[in-house]
Amino acid sequence: WDEESPENSKSNGQRTTEGARNNEYLEHPRNIDVTDQLQFFVKNSELEIHAQSKSEILGFYNPCHGLNGAAPLLKIRYQLASWVYEITFNDFDPVELPSPRAMLIGNVASQPMVQWENM
Image (cartoon, rainbow, N blue to C red):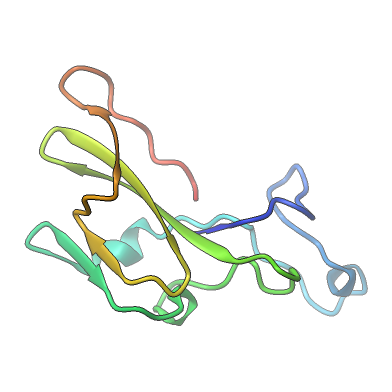
């Protein structure tokens, strides 16, 4: 789960907004790992999430809350057989994996496994 715009980022991975500086609230990290949450939806090596805001899914939240114009993105890197793929979804896009739109990253048998990024 990622944000479209890296503005307002700090080196420690957290953002602040004018409200946070005024102690109204603290922002969450702009990238969150939702591997476990997505694994719940995997059935028979397929992932399907209907069109809805991902922030409505248990365990997710909107890391762009409070950032004007920033839209959250869901970036998924997955392995199918010995192949590693990556795909990005907009917040309200339905998610169906495997997907013919996913970009092939590489073959696990011919190279080390690509590490999960904290998205």
